[in-house]
Image (cartoon, rainbow, N blue to C red; front, side):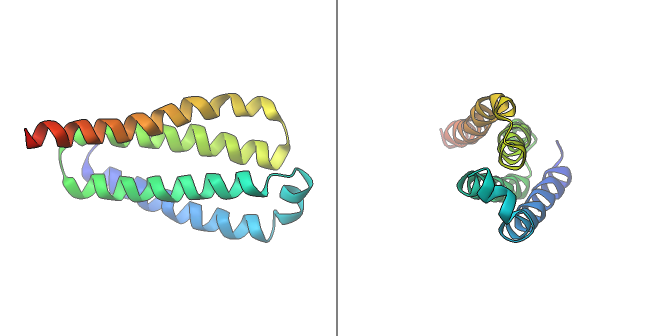
Amino acid sequence: MKSQVIFICGSIFGLIAVILGAVGSHAFKAILETNQRTGSWALAVNFQLFHALLLLYISSQAKDQKSWAALLAVIGILLFCGSVYAVSLTGIKKTAVLAPFGGVCLIAAWLVLLTEYWFRKS
């Protein structure tokens, strides 16, 4: 991924996280309370926002090798946050099967970033 694409992804994910945070506390409040998923929704919004910031940081480094960390973060956001949003709104727990894969991608993104930093400093 090029740094401009990573920056755009980070900005869009950040924008969507803020919108979903607001929509979750207003328009979806009754659904989330009925499904007892207000905490899950907040977790997904927080994870999405934190990883949007990670993408913005990665884009500022302008290194092509950072694209693996960015790609893993994008996949992680889509799988983890997306599945948590889906379960929170629908109550269908089968969708949650994607969350662990997304979580592993998010962890791997941080690990790739750390590894790249470590070897660059060596």
